[in-house]
Amino acid sequence: MRHPARKAFLVVALALAAASAHAQGAVPADNAGARGVVAAADFKLESYAGQVVMLDFWASWCKPCAASMPWLTAMQRMYGKKGLQVVAVCVDKDEKAMRSRLDLLDPNIVVVFDPKGKLAEKYKLEGMPTTFLIDRDGKVKGSHIGFRDVETDAREAELAKMLEGKPTEGK
Image (cartoon, rainbow, N blue to C red):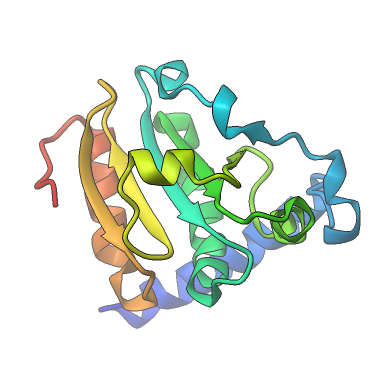
C-alpha cells in the first residue's frame, strides 16, 4: 500500500469488520451449520443482474484464500450498498471443512458449495483463490489468481470503477 495512513485505515477497517461480524451474529466455526449455503446447482448468476459480482473461488486448505477473506468482507461492507455482491464459491469436497471457514466471511456474502467443481470448471479455474469481476450485465470484466495484500489497492480501484459504471481493462 502506498500510504501508511491508508494501510492503517485498512487494518482498522478489517478489525472493525471482524468485530462487527461477531457482534452481528456471524456464525462461529463450531456453529457454522446455521448459516445458509447455496448448492452449486442452485446458483444462478442471473439472480444478481444489475449488481457487480465479485465471484471468488476458495477452499478451506488454501492459505491465500483464508488471507483474502477479511478483504472480501471489507469490500462487501464498503461497497454492498453501492451494488456489490461478493459470492464465495467453495470447492472443498468436505462440507464440514468448508463450514469451518464461514466465520471469516461477512454474513452478507453469498456462499456457494461446489464439491464437484462444476462452477470451477465453467469458469476454467486455474489456481486458488481466483476472483472474477462480473459487471452489472453479467459479463466477466476481470480476473485475479492468487491473493497478495500488496495488490488490494489496485483491486479495490478496479472494483470501484466497475461500481461507478466506468470501463475496466479485463484480464
